[in-house]
Amino acid sequence: MNKLDENQKYACNIACLYLSLYDVIAYQKLSEGSVSQRSVHELLSLKFKVKPNYIKNTRDEFDYHVNNTRVGFRRELSKAKKELLNKYKELNEIELYNELQRVLKLDYTSKFTEENDTKPFLKKISKKLKVKQFTILGNDLFKDFFIKAESDYKNSNTLTYVPFDLLNDDNNSEDFEFSEQIEINKIFRNRYELGNYLYDILKNCDEKNIYNNEFLWNWISASLFSSLFPSPRGGGQEIRYILSNNLMYHYRHICYFSWLIFKQFEDKSKVLLTSPVNSISDDYEQIASNRRLLNINFIKLISEMYLIEDLKTKSIKFKKGVNATKKNIPGTVRRLKTIYKRLSSNYYVERMKYRDFKNSVIEFSDEFEQHLN
Image 1: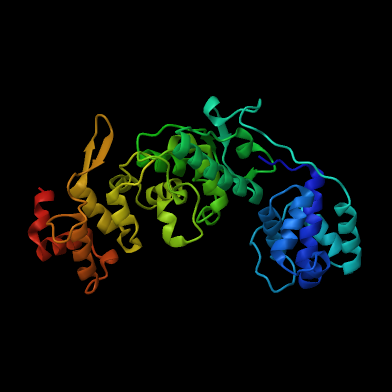
Image 2: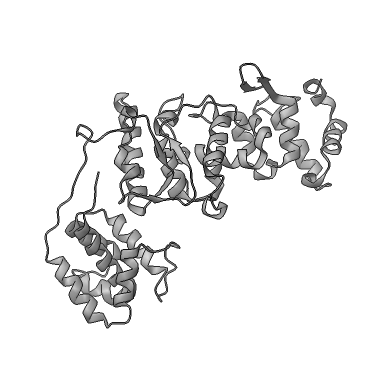
């Protein structure tokens, strides 16, 4: 796993600032017979011993803060990047180009941490760590780690454990303001416990920094990885651990949506979060994939009809036989969704009183009364 030294970071920052400020001119000067951005990124990555994506992502960071046609990555610059930007943005192109030529002439080495070295892996430790979020580098490294972990499990039935420095090294992670500590690889009985726990450790944080934050949620996935992977069926889809760029699939991220569902519905969220933490149940898939169903009336009704809870053992489970995928089976979640859709054409269901909504469902079809007795 790559760990950048100060010379590497400085060189990458100089190169990416140059690309960001001078764009086409910069790529023309750095290309070897081609103006391909990809080829320039690969050239710089080979020279500085980093991944091409690190060059691209660092340039994206600068793009948001300079006057060019690119949108860039909406994120505050680190202190080192700010200092470089302030130093060179008012100077002419040749001065920054000369500095880039200087760093290109230097030699760089890459440091690695292997699975058999002396650094601790998360399986071997039990400790708490203040919640952080990945840097761009750390996020890319976790994505690479997941590919390896999934491959090792599928090909040789071997579990791969997250290196501790992926979570805690300053190159890979940064503080997440006002967060509490997280217990590394904490064990949970179900996703409801997970959601409750994540809510507690993030409750003092600014919510706008939590929503859809891939750097935060991927870091949390990494910190709990041994509890989340593999799934009961072996391995696991990437989008369960790495937050998708497509908002439509965020409900499949185990940690993010466990937190989001608990935050929205608190105790009533149990009915959606009955499954083990390393799996996504069929009933959850049927409901959470349709964001219109995620309102308190619908959640209260399915809790009343389908949730089985043992208050002594605190076990929770979804009633069997009601998540059938075939059409026209009475009393199932699928039938309830159909009726909800029809009611929604005449009523603003989210604003109805719960009693009125419940009675409307029963009046529409008495097939659900068996689950309400």
